[in-house]
Length: 348
Image (tube, rainbow, N blue to C red; front, side):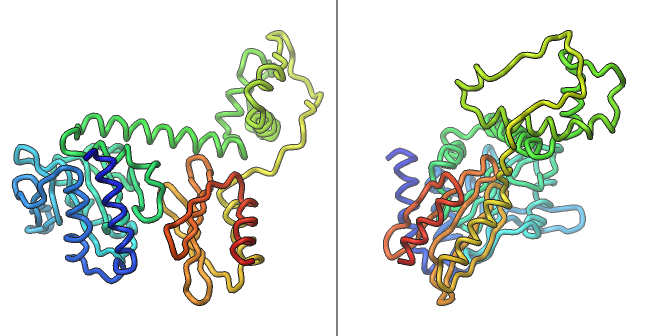
């Protein structure tokens, strides 16, 4: 079977165990979830020369420190794995132990997992110092496998190449920074961005660019960017009026359409929670902030979980994973308001 087929089979088995997972001990989590996961990736989890349990990672302040597992190649660790029980939520304070292990080994990949959520770390910011944020993170029960299956496959034993993994991680990090910066600049342009446009040869200010000038043109910059990004590709080609290089910047205001209220992670979350309060009897929710998603776990007072809304931090896409008696139903939403029609049908 291919990796994709093995992975689907593993996920199917995991979901059948969903009810028992919160009660698993750490040792049960290792044997029932974590070891089978890495076995699926092609590693012999019963061969200590390849998949070593209780790998010793002596640190300067304490000897005999052990990480739960280390994947070895030619006797050297290439991946460190720290395991927690399935019912434990992974948080930053749990990274401390793995952080210490990472600093005393030459391996560049560390994994923190509870058998359901997997967080992959490296040293992209500083050599031999584990990053604070994972370059790959996913929840096997809640996230759409299409979003992370390809990334997981690069850790298969027969194709694992540390240089390729790090290269992709660096590219992904750069892409996230670009997306985050653009979204922030769409709402409140940075000084650097406004200064860049003011220094363009097509725009002659006639004087040194000052902080007062940057503040003066910040709003115009935001409106112009919102206008451009709200246009289709065809409209973009026909709606731009090039500015002559000899044109002088004047006090004449540029007439732009009224800017739309900016769509942000906060506004989407607030809208969805307000809809839930108005449309769902006995509505209550629990939010979860992960590196890649902002999640809203929706419950009623009888503790029945109705589903999970996931808002992607990279592109603000919205997904509602509806839970019922059968398999979860995944709804891709175009806006927060689309959530209303779904919950109206649920409560009808």
